[in-house]
Image (cartoon, helix red, strand yellow):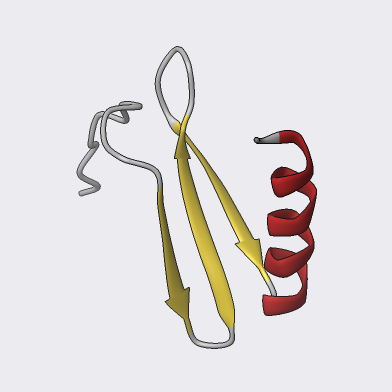
Length: 55
């Protein structure tokens, strides 16, 4: 039997290192979470792109 768990967008944004990957969990509007699995290089590129638009 499979247990169903409700998915909510509640909770903080988080990033964890899992093996060689970095996993980001971002709460989404309307419920749920956006989960991204990135390499260290991709995470660095994302950081640089975000820093350009956030002052």
